[in-house]
Length: 66
Image 1: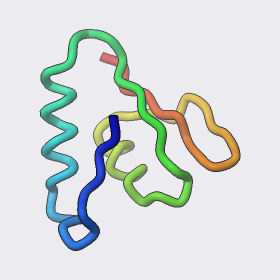
Image 2: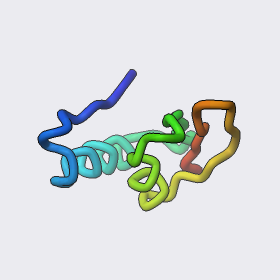
Image 3: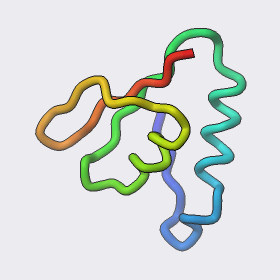
Image 4: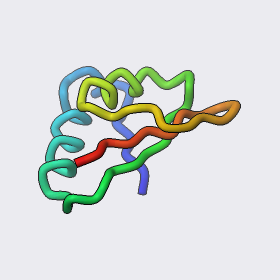
């Protein structure tokens, strides 16, 4: 699954709200995602508690442990 916010609507808390809902509704399993190294959304993920667990040339793999 991918989550993308229209660039015109970014920075308004929409992505954070959606991710917070996903986190709150998830089971006790870790939540994992990948984000391009050039994508500023990685700051959002970090602010929500996601940690980098791996990386490749282009992406960070991040995880939120519950």
